[in-house]
Image 1 (cartoon, helix red, strand yellow):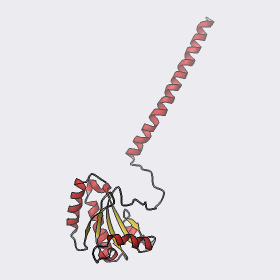
Image 2 (cartoon, helix red, strand yellow; image 1 turned 30 degrees about the vertical axis):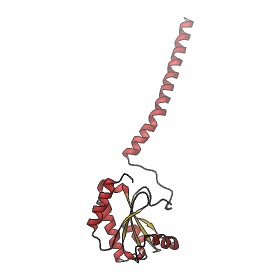
Image 3 (cartoon, helix red, strand yellow; image 1 turned 60 degrees about the horizontal axis):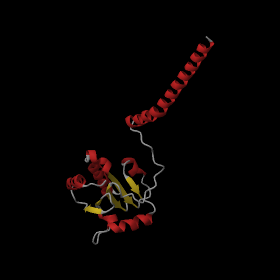
Image 4 (cartoon, one colour; image 1 turned 180 degrees about the vertical axis):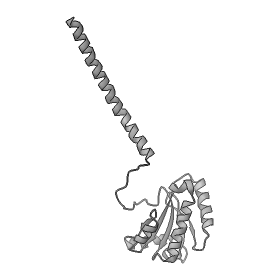
Length: 183
């Protein structure tokens, strides 16, 4: 009788340990899956650590770039056109980014009106020297009013004069993105 009770107690202890191990394994393997599904459903993505511009800012995505010394009425009109062009890309929106290179020191109004626009304005000397590579013929890029299109490899593909219709720009962008394997 004592031997049977001892066997029953050992059997129950083994059964409890087996269930505990099974429960721990389920928690260990299922918790990450639940976390990933929740992150996907809630569209949660980790945030970056600041507004520091990467050296490869013009790589990995198509870039629509506008350069200006002062953001006057023409600048605001071009920023609005760029936003409208970007929105019109529909499913291709994540492949394109909009950038403003300017020497204006106070850009709070621009950031407020265009929150998704990447603005680079400091240091002023670096912005001016960077903009010089976009000069076309006798035209200075900071005063030309052009929109520049840069591919995901960092190459200047096209530039559009201030008088170019946004519909023509959109036509070119959609065609380039359709046949592009990068970005």
